[in-house]
Structure formats: C-alpha cells, structure tokens
Image 1 (tube, rainbow, N blue to C red):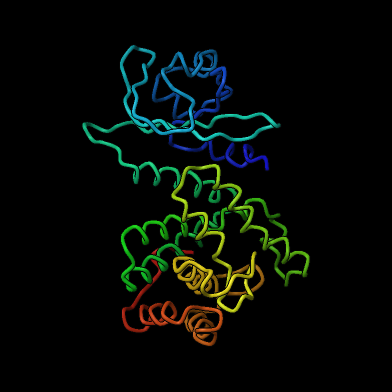
Image 2: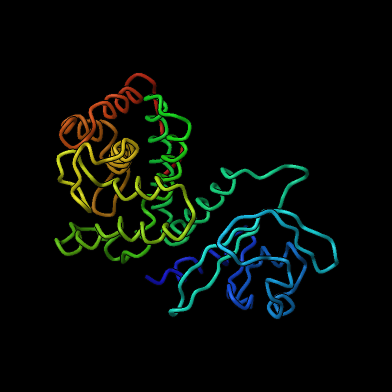
Length: 301
C-alpha cells in the first residue's frame, strides 16, 4: 500500500521539523517549514543539500545527533526515520526533535512524538475522528487505571486509543459523513479501516502490542466482531477495554445519521451485552466510573 500521500498533508502543517529524502543518495525531496525555521535556511538553499551534508543519517532508527545551522551553530536532538513507499520507490520520512536545555530524550518521549504525528494525520482530514479518538483514549485509560493495569499496559492502551481509527483516512468522506443508514457494501468498506490502520502504523517502530490492540478493537467476545471474528481468549485485555470505551464514546456523540444518544443509552448497550460481546469486568468498571465517580469527557465534540 502506498502511504506517502497520507503523511504529506500533515507533513506541511506539522510543527515538528521533517523532511523526505532518498535513503540511498541522501537527496532531499522536500522539507517542511519547521525544519527551515530551525536551521535558518530558505527552501531553495536547503533542497540542494543532502542529509549527509547536514549530518543526518537516513537509517530506520532513532539517535541523538547535532545538526549545523546556516550560521554555523549546532542544534542537538533526536532524529528518527521511517521508510515509506512512493511510486514503488522507497523514501525516508525524517523527524527531528530538538533537545531543550540539558534535558535528555527517552524512548517514551520519542514514541509520544510518533503517536502525535499519526494522530495529526487524522485530525487534518477529519477533525471529528480526532475528537473521538481523544475522548475514547481518555475513557479507556480511566477504565484501565480502575482495573489496575500496569503502567506499561496503560501506556500501550493510551497510544493505541489515540490512533485507533487512523485507517478511516482511507474511507470516502461520502461514507463517513453519510446522513442515512449505510448500505451493506458501504458498511463492509467502513470495516476495512481496521486493517488499513494496521497497514499504516506497521511502518512506524511502535511497541509490538499497539498494532495488535488497534487491530482487535472491533472484535467481540462471541466472535461476532471483525476483522477476524476472534473470541474471548484470543482478544487482548487492552483491546477489550478499547472496545467498550469506543462504543460508549460513539453512542454519546453526534453522528451524521443521528443525534447523540447519551451516556445512559451507551451504558445500557454495554450492560445488555456484558459477558456476551463485551468483557464483564471492563463493563462494570466503565459503569462505575460514570455512576459513582462522576467521569466526564474533558474533550468537547
């Protein structure tokens, strides 16, 4: 699947310094304004250079390095690269995060930057999807915290929830924004967003469990979900949590084909199918958050 085009519109608007380059020759194909501002070059001056001249190494890795600016000073930070396919040719998307003061970068900080970039791709195309992902992330993490998941488990879930619908950028807006009921064919096309999302994120070096959590968030305990029809023991706990948070947020929010149904209707839905489609413990903790702990979504629709 060609995914270069998916990143390009986010690339130009991002506040993170980024460039596209040939991983073999180092030739720079394009650079965003954030990178130009960081180093003090005009685009014409920058584009004739190679990443090797700048001190960047277009390898699929993250490393600490220093880049020389136009006036000769050094900018230090972490550079990361991910290989993408464009017109059957491999390209490198390079991202540079400047080091602030004497701070040090951690793997978690780099992962957060990657997740933020992927999330912005959704936001630029469909602001609604971005809001849905943020609210779902908030609820999923609250449930996980109540269930005493490990810090690693909550972090993985948080990152997965933040981009769980990224595959929808490949779904026609005519389907996403259709005011009426979807036809069977349209619904089948909508379901492909899970597998498309997995195709997108597999090109980023994320912890192995994050793509798995995302790929299972529409699976159901009784095997009625998609894309693989997995059953209870085959589904990660994090995916079971994400599934409940996803349903509750979706039912509580406006859709093109219906007004928001409200929290009560959403909680009735997960309670009616507790133990059948949705994990019983996850449902109980979710309901308790709303009924006893006054949980509220902090992100507006």
